[in-house]
Image 1 (cartoon, rainbow over the protein chains, first blue to last red):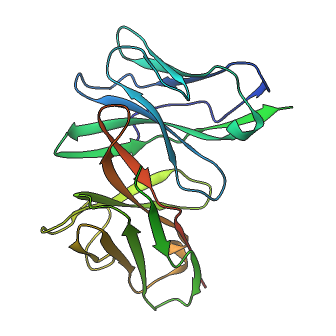
Image 2 (cartoon, rainbow over the protein chains, first blue to last red):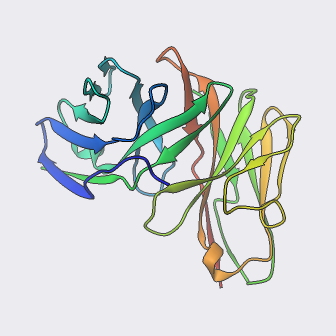
Length: 112
Length: 117
């Protein structure tokens, strides 16, 4: 069973920030939040992950609320190539035995 | 990151037959995963395949229907047996590798698009 809830679709203008929300109210203390995206007809691509602290890399920023029940993926300057389905995922288990539980995803459309 | 290839990229099969999907990685990895993505749906984990041990299947998936081999650290196969139209999906393999984030990340192959008629 999915442990995350995401809006089915969103859109934003090219060059603006895209803020994708995710609810994971049943997350446990040692479970990570991962974000992947899937561009049509391709395998999912890793974006970022975090446990408690906010994280930033060259692709995006991840903001996790203090109670860890929700998070937001931020694409600071969306481009047309960022149009994809974005999956918020909870990683359950330990480093030696774990699995990714995919949510239903948010279809992001970046408008010119 | 690991480069993953899958064969075939797509296939159309008749019901009652079986198809074996191959997953090849360009580096040695311990953990490999097989997922199913039904049309318009998200990904569902089928099983985890570690080299040297039996695959671990998720609830709703059984070895008789989806036998998996993991003969070495760079290769795995998934067989979809006695296929029915309900098996029409994209099947993806993924591997775990140490990433630039400073922790393990999963990388996915391009997928095998299966249509059962």
